[in-house]
Amino acid sequence: MELKVKKAVEILSKCNFLVVLTGSGVSAESGIPTFRGKDGLWKNFRAEELATKSAFEKDPKLVWEWYDWRRQLINKARLNRAHLAIARLEKMFEQFFLITQNVDGLHSRAGNKKLAELHGNIWRLRCITCGKVSFNVDVSLKEIPPICKCSGILRPDIVWFGESLQERNLAKTYASTSECDVMLVVGTSGIVYPAASIPFIAKDRGAKIIEVNLEETPITQIADVSIFSKAGEILPKLKK
Ligand code: BJW
Ligand code: ZN
Image (spheres, helix red, strand yellow):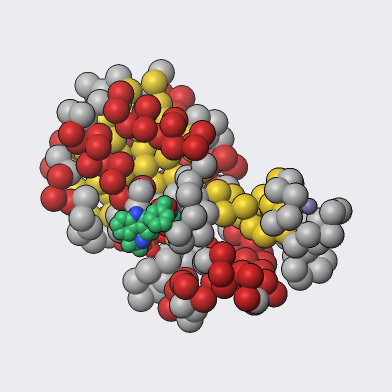
């Protein structure tokens, strides 16, 4: 493993424009469950029962209870060494961009500013009637489902299956993906599209790919280095 870390550091030392792509594995060491795998969030819930527009329309209360539970977990969570190292990387590279699939907002809490939250943010709410977006920092919602001033139902401002990602986020994502010379991919299973295609696009454009994950993923086949270990252990070493 030390050799792989050394190779990754070598790649990073020649890098001018770094893009980091993260998934839920980055927050796992903060005690936030990932989506898949044996301790995944989906274990007790079927994704299609909760993370779709039709599920929300059918039973907004059930879907909100799940998000309310996650908001409480995230609120209590502390940043881990992977979040801190990624925030530090933004300061070390003049050209830097972070693409995250996480909705927990922990990268911003760690200090990252140049980022796109591809799948939205669990602390933002959006009215299904008037479309108004608002921040809600109350950890536990006072009423479930919460209601907008226009009396429409508020939903989490999150991208559910079958929904389109925000155009603005996608534009920044594809621009940085085609310009970067290294992409560091951390803690994602690489199976949810369009995020899963991002490392492949970067590779096609000539970028080197460094992967940090506990296990092999579809990205492993194109990675220049894959380090199979915890993000919180490896990222501080790469930063050095
Ligand atoms: C560690 C670790 C440690 C753990 N250290 N590592 C093309 C082909 C096939 C299907 C599609 C396609 N294009 C679109 C689709 C449909 C769909 C899709 O991709 N389905 C796939 C499942 C096949 N995509 C969509 O619907 C997207 N919309 C879209 O494309 O719109 C256009 C369109 C519409 C209709 C039809 C076609 C096109 C939207 C996707 C939105 C995804 N949203 C979710 C839920 C958000 C709700 C919420 O958070 O509540 O986002 S799904 C869920 O998965 C969540 C995550 O962001 C996302 C990615 O998961 P992630 O982060 O990778 O987590 P895990 O659990 O999968 O993996 C964790 C990893 O960490 C593991 O590898 C561990 O080993 C590792 N790990 N501890 C390092 N300590
Ligand atoms: Zn409204």
